Amino acid sequence: MKTPTDQKPRICIAEDDNISRMLLTNMLTKWGYDVLALSDGQAAFEALSEDEGPRLALLDWVMPGMDGITTCQRLRTEFPRRTYYLLLVTSKTDDEDIVSALRSGADDFVAKPYSPHVLQARLEVGLRTLALQKSLAEYANRMETLAADRAAQLVHADRMSSLGILSASVAHEINNPASFISVNVQTLRSSWPSVQRVLSGEGADLDRKRAAALAVEMPDLLSEMEEGVTRIRRITSELRAFSRTDTSEVSPVDVIACMNKALRMCSARTKGFVQVRYSPPESLPMVLADALKLEQVFVNLILNASDAMEDSPVRQLEITLARVADTLQVRLQDTGPGVPPEKTESIFQPLFTTKPIGKGTGLGLHISRNLVEECKGTLDLLQAPGMGACFEVVLPIPPDA
Ligand code: ADP
Image 1 (cartoon, rainbow, N blue to C red):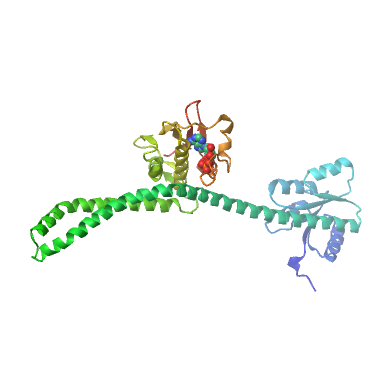
Image 2 (tube, rainbow, N blue to C red; image 1 turned 30 degrees about the horizontal axis):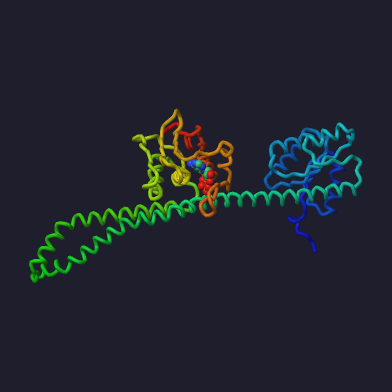
């Protein structure tokens, strides 16, 4: 069966001697190659530079204009990520010549006069090498995509883990407004028959008293319920936003608002357990970041500090936000035991945790550091002896902010 032309291996030959070029073309065509025959290095360079150009080439070393060596050098420097298999044809066979040919970027060489069998075998090596390089490049591409997908999944997993930790205390937060809404509904329900009787003119004294009392209480009952519903709505919408899986959305972000939100999310965990000292400045310049991811970083740091202070006699978390030169500095200083000096870098490694199974994933700090670095910032641990841990996030302020 005849092989279609586009499935034949393509080869570019550059040979200035007309007769040699014709003989080579005939021979390679007979071996099943799709041949592009050119008479100088410049034309070969142009053909090989094209996106869809051949990747296998047989170049004469000595040619007028651009020689074979220069063609190899230029292809390697101008297209460093492309895979070529470049075979030089030469009558120079000194060791020095061979070394300089290979160092210029040629993959192999054949000495003139060459045996057709040797040339054929060397070209087969070239085709095998190109095929291997191609599958390696495809594999590397797949790995890169997979790694990017996995990294995004880890960020989401870390967020879900924080949500898991928060869910018990968030349930409590929701329960509070829900129970006073329920009490108020009971009050309305029990007084309503009296109101109905008064409205239909059948009400007794007690009904009138109850209806009058309800009329006085009503505005308070309604505003309490309204406040409760607003609180529940805010908690659920913040949780929903926090569990989003979207990819990055970088925009000018108010770090104070981000920290306020993170503190609100963690309040159910910190309330009555950790004394949070936080007095942000009135305003700070915006930074370029993904607000949700920055919130995730702050939630991680706040939850870590709360965990670390579990057995501390004093549980205090001091959060400071300040502008320092062209950066915005966020510090979270706790009164826990701090991090042992030999672990100050391992805590940022993925899967490093000192927490029991089910409580720690060991992803929080690693992911947080990556998220901060995505915004061109840094996340580090600063700690002085006997002072607990202090985590510092530094974010660059864009020049026009
Ligand atoms: P996880 O919280 O799941 O353990 P992290 O990456 O957030 O994962 O934290 C890794 C480890 O760093 C923790 O297990 C803990 O040992 C240590 N660590 C983090 N924050 C603090 C802190 N504020 N004080 C002391 N140790 C901390």
